[in-house]
Image (cartoon, rainbow, N blue to C red; front, side):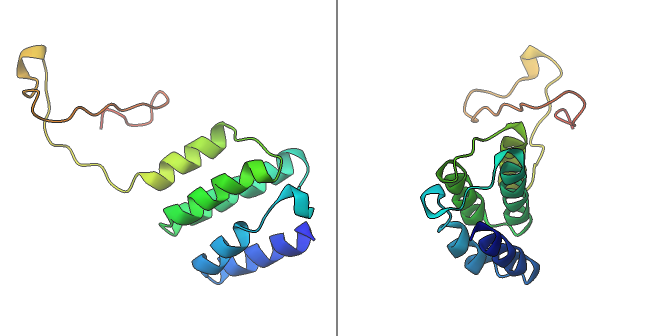
Length: 123
């Protein structure tokens, strides 16, 4: 049964039928026999997160996140990376500060950039 749902989700994603793919992801449940064993299942779900992100569908991303524990799987670092990539649409530089004295006044909300080394956080 899981293989059929997986093939159906793949067909929906290829046809760019985002809402139908979300509806099907929302039905995935380990109690219904939808468990895909081990890393293969999580790899597939991570690809779904990535695909929904490319479709700019945060609803799909979060539906897939909700389905992962229902399928008896746990998130990994790649899952989190794909969610973060899906959530960020654009970045805009507002102001630079080269010293503590040139920092903006505390009327502007502070933003923190977190990420791996050499990934362009300072850009």
